[in-house]
Each structure stands twice: as structure tokens, then as C-alpha cells.
Image (cartoon, rainbow, N blue to C red; front, side, top):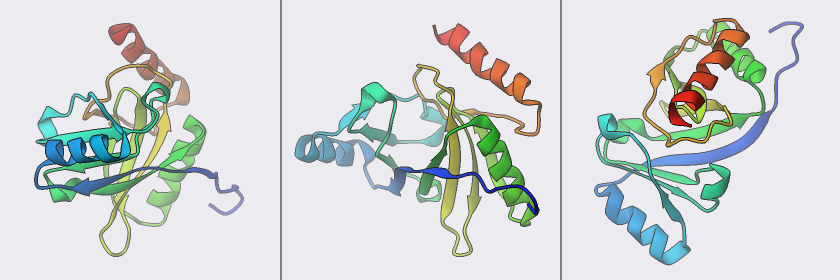
Length: 158
């Protein structure tokens, strides 16, 4: 990215950790810290639990996975253009993209740091629906097509 300005991350938005019993651990965080357990459609991932201190805003704080390979740190960007720029930047650096997904509530891609920690970069679509595991999506498609994909989620979940 020679002449392009690097987009800014909004910040860390959630951390995904492994747990022997995601539901029980989520119950602990609910009882002790008051975090709400957020309904999700992630059956394909095995046992999971998503928690939020502000569920009405669609935000997550913690995610627990029975599968330790799904642990990750999630960073948000403020626009679809920023997501696409980061995606291309990671490709240009020669880092392998592990997956690119439409979660309904967000579009995201995943890659690993040099020590193998998974990183998620995502853009919130603004679509109010139950987060799901996600379908693959091609972030190199024109932005208008990607926005139409997001809107189709809204039509099917609205």
C-alpha cells in the first residue's frame, strides 16, 4: 500500500477464548459480571457462547468456543471500504487469509499473526439479525454488490 493511507481500526470489539464448557462459563460471566448471553446461530462450530455488556447495540465482549482453534481477537473498522482496504493489505503482505465470512451482522476476514493467534477484522453491516457462523463472501466483489448482499440478509431476517 504505497500511496494509500492505512485505514484506522475502531478498536478491539471482542475476544474469543476456548472453554471446556462454553455454556457454563457464560453462566458464570452472566452471574458475576452481568454480561448478557447473546443468541447466535453457530451450531456448525460446536458449543459456543457469546456475551455482551450492550446487546442492544449489537456488540460482543466475549465469545467462548469449545474448539480452541476458533480463538481470536476481533477488531472493527468503520466502513466497508476500510474492510476491503485491510483485506487487500493483508494479501499484499503475503499473509494467508483463513476465511472471509458474511455473519449477517458483519462481514469479516480472518488471518493469523506470526505466533498463530487468529485475528478477525470486521465491518458491522448495521443489519439487526441473529449472528451466525456465516457464509463465505468475496470481498473483492464491487462494493455495491457487497452492500446488496448485506441488504438481502435484512430482507430475509426482517
